[in-house]
Length: 371
Image 1 (tube, helix red, strand yellow):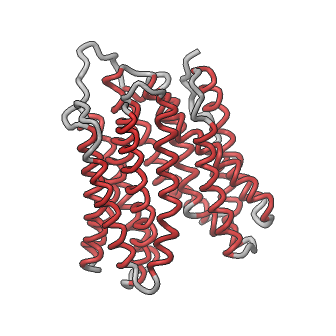
Image 2 (cartoon, helix red, strand yellow; image 1 turned 30 degrees about the horizontal axis):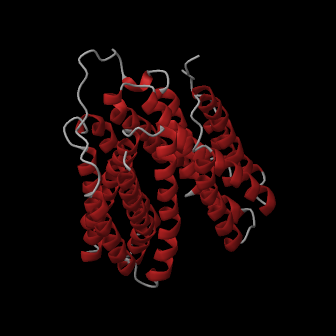
């Protein structure tokens, strides 16, 4: 990867993630403003998650026919369109279409952008750490900007998000024109995600995705229920999100394969146990803040090293498929973890639900790491 291409990649990720952060807040709030209840909003968000999972299942094959830069550019266009559809109308069909388009866009962008940066000569870990760093910064700034713009009508924020995503098209179209992946004649038999190294990346995605899902759903509710103020909870969630950036930055120079595997094997239980601790210590702001920071650092490391170890474990022409596989497991965890937690909430209070779900995320899930 050239220096200019790295800059175009970073610029695209910054613009796209900023727009995504805005739309992720504005879309559900606009649904509420339009008169939809909590259950209906939940179903709309679930539709986005399902479309993301389904899209990732096919992206490995798509990247053997379509160059990654074009997939990235299409993702920017789809995100802009998803926002504009909802701005134009508040009926159920436009909202559903907007959520589906956002899910497809997320799948295409993160798979395409991560695949693009690991095809260069630079370390996969360093390349992914860089793209994740700017992406997380955008995801932090986007919701803040949305909060300032929304007021009583989220359509202004959605319009700005659409514009930001459209602007991201400019650097996306300047990316290196790398050719689509070629199908290997001597490809190893069996499913790629089951291979040693690739599965390590997939299980890292499961834990990191579950962590992200809990952080954006039941963790804030459990903390408020335990007596913490909304301001304190907001600061704790912000600290956890910032910690993911720190986690990606810490592991950016880890190139040794054994060190990567040790961090992955340690990161899974650390993330799960730390998020479980937030349920156990939900009434203590200090303990929860510490646990969320620790879990965020570990999750940030998993988000970076997971796709990197999967990409490095396969042939160069299979890297796109490997990264798509890790993303599929992460997206599935983003969807299924809140569903599992919802089932537990029906039987036990929120805080114990967080503790039990976190312990499940800490499980090793059948390691297949190379010796």
